[in-house]
Image (tube, rainbow, N blue to C red; front, top):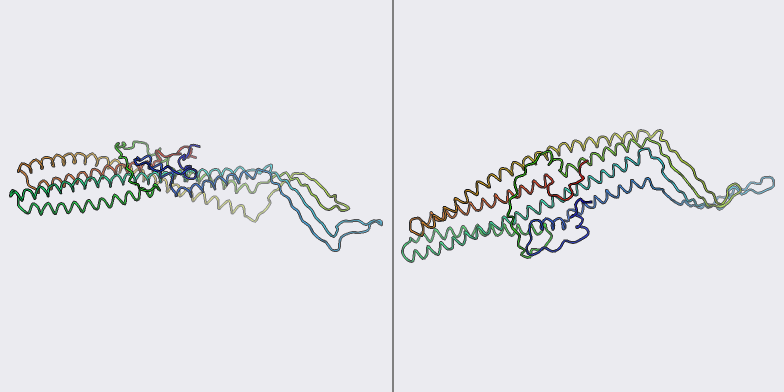
Length: 427
């Protein structure tokens, strides 16, 4: 089977330790292999597989031994024509070996196995949906860690610039070419930058803590490879995305399984045909030998059960209706989610392009402000404002870039793209 190849690693092979440098794909594989959340769904799938085996066992022969012993007082030993007949002795025993083989179930076996196999497919789709959620969670945490790391780098650059400005202002005051309040202004700007930098450091630590918790791996200072390429916005038919949805596939299989259970319940009214063979070993009497073998056909025809099977059939039909209602609601929610994600991706892509232009303009403004300040044409306030605007532009651009990537990641989960095992999940 091709489905969910990586999930099998969870119960069979422990994931290899993370290298000192790893990328998004490695993080996703690690999370999938180490996720404790998948074990429950794996157990459910195995349970469904065993239920399939259970239903197929109805077609297998059964073999059993029935034995017993008894004492009857007084024994039945009449005298006939002057001869003592041993009909029921005082001490009796018997041992019967019975073989029973179902020949015709008239739909019971067919619909029972169909219901079990469809339920197994539903559990398989649920497991794949949960695995897709693990991949999404790991991807979002990886991107969030990269984002917080870049924010630390930006605030650190600003902090270094503020420290350089403060040193320069002190030099200018000592030389008598600048007023003392220039030092105060730079000290205030430096204190503000230090506060922002400390907040970014704390955010970055929390992001790494969450990421390595998802990966079930110790944080040994591994370096995360940046995501350099921006994937294009998806341009596909919404209907195709809905057809790939794993949660909807699981619900469709569940509906089909419930319909099969309705047929199985209705088949309980049908007759059954068995082959019965017995070999009996007992104490011999005047009329019964010590060993006896018999074989024959047994036909069972239900006549009246007090309405039990009809009530069970009605219950099973209502379960189908409930599942269909749940599926319709889930389909509407899935459609809304996909449409919302597509709009979000488009909006974030457009915002990213706009912010890129603004970043280039802010960078050029900083360059000009520095030249003006060094040549005595600009003020310290002008330089600080331009650097703050440039830092804000860098922050907004970085945030927008990773928010776009996170939206793409969420869409891939919602549309079941790049998810192992999406084949064979459509009834």
